[in-house]
Length: 205
Image 1 (spheres, rainbow, N blue to C red):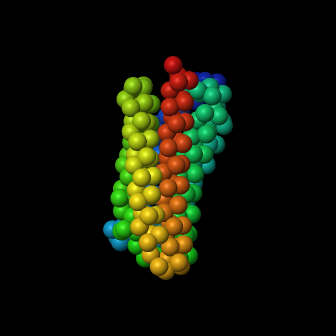
Image 2: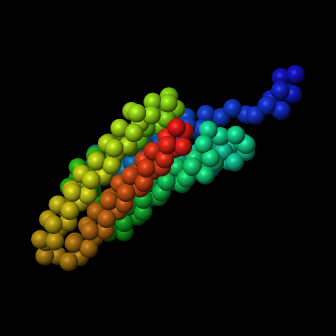
């Protein structure tokens, strides 16, 4: 009888819990980047492994999402967030490629920007927990915090570019400008993902 019921009844999936897990591993990718280029405590191989783990988890969640008929909001809204979390990971991957290509050994001078990114991802994780717990007011407040931190990062980006342009070595200017642009791109992707979480709240209400 149990097997029969499992066959005919819809499978219960914690969709928002799954999004939270995906957000957690996305944060771990960012943390690993920080550990490599600021703390100098991890390696590129560990970052690549973490990126692969994030991609494998995303694919598993998407397969599960596509296997069910009933979801708390439309499937497109949920899958869009998986895409946007993946874009955060991809942006970090692209940043790491730029760092390696330009033979840059550390990012300590841009630590403030990286710490802002980490704070944004902490808030993002909290957003998904509040979505799961239906604490929509707190969630929307956290989305606003993410957007404010994105603004702070853009200001820091502008300061760093201004300092960079005072240098005489054109090669250094180009190399570090690319790194700064990629850091800004990660923040943009986090901002976009936060907006999509906000959109889900509006659909639920």
